[in-house]
Amino acid sequence: MPLASDALLPVTPTLGWVLALLLAAAVAIVALAGLSPDARTRRAPQVLRAGLRAAAQLAAVSLAIGWVVRSGWALPLFLLLMYGVAVRTAGRRITAGPAWPWAALPLAAGVVPVVLLLLLTGLVPYRGITLIPVAGILVGGALTATVLAGRRGLAELGQRHGEVEAGLALGLAEREARMEIARPAASDALLPGLDQTRTVGLVTLPGAFVGMLLGGASPLQAGAVQLFVLVALLAVQSAAVAVTLELVARGRLADAPAG
Image (cartoon, rainbow, N blue to C red):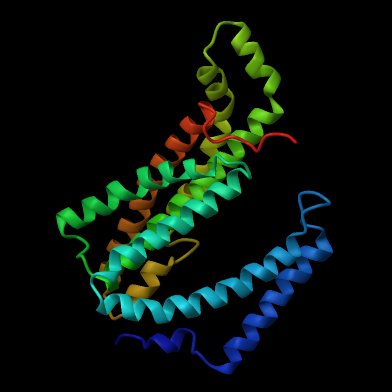
C-alpha cells in the first residue's frame, strides 16, 4: 500500500517551528565555530539569508509550477529561467569579474545533450510535471560541479603561479601550463557525485527514490529511476567539469582583476 505524501513530512505549524529551529542552530554553529574563510566574509548571515531565500523561492515556485504545468507555452520560459539563474549563480561563485557569463557554456554542455536525449527517446515526455523536476536535478548537478571545478582550478593556479611560469619557460603553451596545474584540483569537483553514486542505497536513499515510493511506485521502479538520475548526473557533471577546466586553462573564466 503506497504511503501518503504527508505521512513522511506533514505540512503543519510544527514543521514551521522545527525549520526555524534548525536554521537558527545552523546560523549559531557557523558563527560560534568561526566557519568563515576570512575576516571580511561572514558565513553565518549567509546561512540565514540562504534559508530565508529558499523558503520564499520554494513558496513562489510551488505556486508557479502549477500554472506552468497547465500552460504549455510557459514551460520553455520556465526552463530558461532555471538555466539563467544557474548561470548567474555559478559565474558569480567562480569570479566577481566580468567573465562570469562564461559559466553558461559548461552548464549547457552538461545539461542540454542529456535533456535532448531524454526527449528524443521518449523517456521523459514534454510535460511540465515530468520535465521540470528532471531538468532541475540536472541543472543543479551541473551548477555544483561547475562552481567546484572553477573555484578549485582558479585557487590552484593562484597558489602555484610560479609553476605555471616555469612551464612557460620550458616552452609549454599557456593553456598547457595552466591545464597541468588546474586539472588535478578541478577534477575534485566530481567527488560529490561519485560518492553519492557509490553509497546510494547503503548510506542514503536519495529524493527520487523516496519520491517514487511515496507516489506509489514499486521499489524496483523507484530503484530504476534513481539509477537513471545518478548516471545522468555523472554524465552531466563530467561534461560540466571538463568544459569549466578548459575555460579556466584558456583564461576565459578568471578571477576579478586586481584594483
